[in-house]
Length: 268
Image 1 (cartoon, one colour):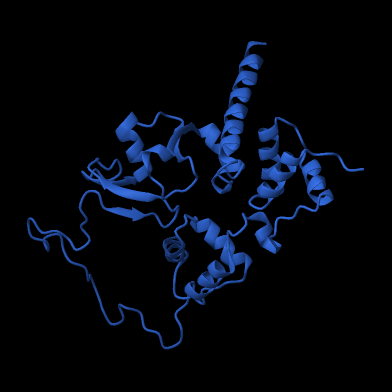
Image 2 (image 1 turned 180 degrees about the vertical axis):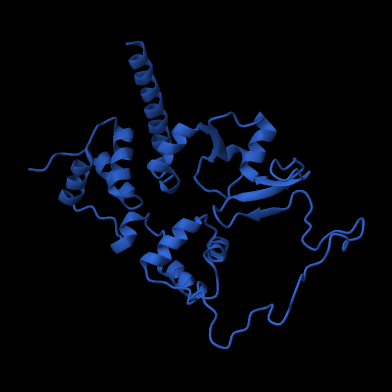
């Protein structure tokens, strides 16, 4: 016999399953309705009420539309001749999204999309330095005083980190690694610090809507590293907007509960 669910609970399952896997849906459902359903119970409910996610194969673990046919065609057409870093930047710029290098790597690997490169010199191919001997680079006196190199960029210049997909901006801060008077810094961190001061130890600045390219002040929030760990666990960035507040509240509640339990155990 079916276990009864309220209409609003079924609507939540239909909406949520279209954008998240069952594990994340279970967490969001329990947070929304203050319940403690197991993953197996939610899976049974989905089956009993004929609720489907609309995804197939490897796409079942991703949000609906994460890789549409148009996006997969772009990956197939643009991976040849590009590195994964270059493909990630091109993909994000073309579709206005913020996929990470690892997500793109997984997508092409799971679907058998290859770049066509072997990493070896092909027969008849010549290296760029064939026939050149000895030191070939310029010496330290090559540049004249006041000369600006071709790759010089002014303060405020922005770029997208090919590895993680965050916006970086050039600021007038001393680089702790090179000692240079300017450096590239994560834009969302820089903006938050301009309003609130340095990020406290053990904390991180994240995006309320989960979109790395949306660096407006109202979209930034400070969380602890422990809270961030749980937000990543529940795939916060890929959740629907109406579910994100519940996931955020759940992450904060879990961290607070763990700290209280740890404190009680220490006093026993």
